[in-house]
Length: 359
Image (cartoon, rainbow, N blue to C red):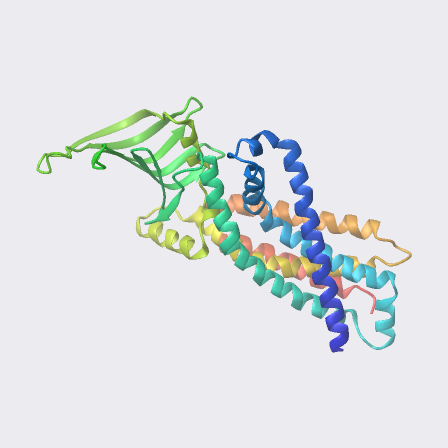
């Protein structure tokens, strides 16, 4: 039985690695066709396109590719075993399909844990570097005190939250420094609307003017219902794209605590945290979901229909996850319930589907 377990686990891991590599190479080709100009302008030297791809692929695709590769690997492993009568031979020897699936699920657990480590290290680091690349390759974003921090010239920006779809920034603080690095002005606003002509419109802004050469001088404060700031460098628009995906889970937890103490909403950041927490489970659940389709992909049935049904199942998962993330981010439903219900629903459906497989 140890040989049989090792056989199925090794096949799953081998196919998983192959699918993941082929998927990433396919994305590389697509990126080269669609974004070649951006790749060439990403930096100086022949290594600029490679740097672009090494940052974009983990930032945008890796978190979705890993569970998809897990599904494809489990489906192919059991589908090929069914096609080659290995499953029939196992049944004849008194070994149930559940026993064949067990080493695959164990291997998927290790893949899920590895994906979480990658997500907390390479993916987070790549996302931060991608933000820096979008901001012109200098003054990278950093995170502390519950906010994203960014410096351009003599201006320092602090952003609590960005919504690229709405082109809004929340919890904005701006600090203007003089040539000696001393504070001359600060601007605080709960929300900023990023306009199309490189201007920011502040709502309920508090502006403080300082006299750096006179520490005893009274700070002049203005309360403005609205104010508009001209952003000289269009690369500062990259601040709109700052997101919580560039934070580790530890930093996300700190961010939640900071916002909670300030009485601010934690829905968006909590949604990112719980979405990331269930990523290892999704890898295992996708392997479980693939098992019934793979076992049904026999000689008479072929691979076509089970593969199409599997693709439909995966697509349904991602569609429901997108809906759940949207509702959870807006506070309609708690992130714990949204992510937990989604994972539980598909885990149960996969287990029920597996019960109907002929034993």
